Image (cartoon, rainbow, N blue to C red; front, side, top):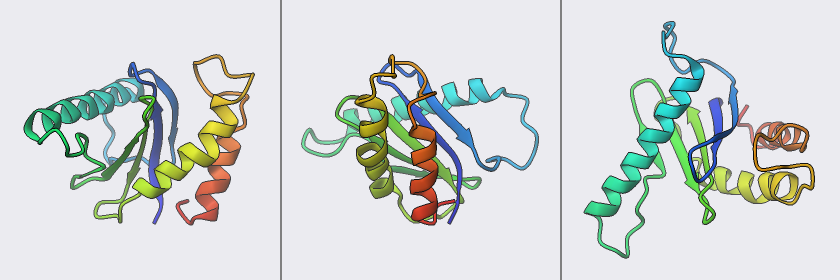
Length: 141
């Protein structure tokens, strides 16, 4: 299996990291990449609110995967509000465990604990290199 795109959002919806490995849609899309990333966050936010309002209080309130004809969107939300998202081919097996591992094994040591990270993008923290290594080690790229 291979990933099509990998994104990381902050609690407030700021895009902290975005890498496109292969376009999700084969046809050219007039929507800019930045706009598309905002739409993905809006979708995640809306679905979380909808499921929270329809689910009993003890049930999880956010979907971990959304399957569409073009791609499957996998999501892991941390307790601190970061959202790790990955697009893969339609019908792909769940990646929630991998996204949680990326947070614990790559994000926390290379971004959260990095004195070089100022809360914005992840440039210069080593996150990109370690993420690529993790994805290749687990045959996700």
